Image (cartoon, rainbow, N blue to C red; front, side, top):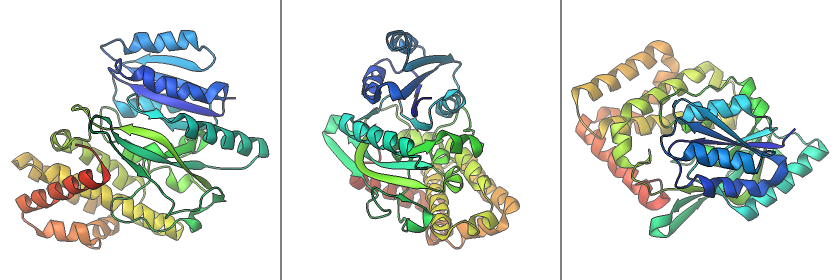
Length: 343
């Protein structure tokens, strides 16, 4: 059995796929790399096949009809033979020294029989064209270099969250929680970093800068222009996350996990508000109103928690539509400037 599966969802990735795969090959024979070609129209399929032919014991090339990023992640989970599972987007990469340290730790834990459901490492926002980067760390939120449970996790605040880039799940956790990301939908990484968490009992945080998250292409989903245009897809993600766990289920979770779950839902709701209100149209207003109505009908207690008991959402929903849009847009631009989120 392979120790880890790296799944690489790829769509029209010919210009950067090789860089990504070359970085993952540094993990050696203990790793499996599944390149999921998601109906690309360029030479992505050819490049994937070339790597599979050159490294037959490590790389697998899978070709499928286009289904979006979530579909690629789902296919990787379905096919993975690795004990652990890590998603690496085709325009991102892993740093060699950090990957070597992680693999050394993983080998040691597996040999000792140490049970870890989720590994966590730092990731780097890379604005390569501008020569800027920002390292997202968790040293103030959890212990370093020991196995721990939720009782050791401190409260997350503001925009801070566990993100897909920082997480390596035990493959069994993903399968046991029944995770299935929606297809043809952007921003499903938010679901990936939320739904499995209650199934995680043990964690291990390594203070290493492992994952380079490339920012700067105009077609990326995190640009303000694309986020504004795709508000309906963020709303679709919010529906999935709202329905994943009821209010009663969340309040029964360990206290730190309960706080984190509410924090994640609040943060994604704020994202949804930004995406939707950053432009004005009858369709947007109707969709936003319907979302809250649907949430109230689905789980009144969770609806009240998000809409009235979380100060940010409460204040925003008191404001006129255009003022909501102006405030959320300004807030996102602030985060982009200070946390390098996108743009």
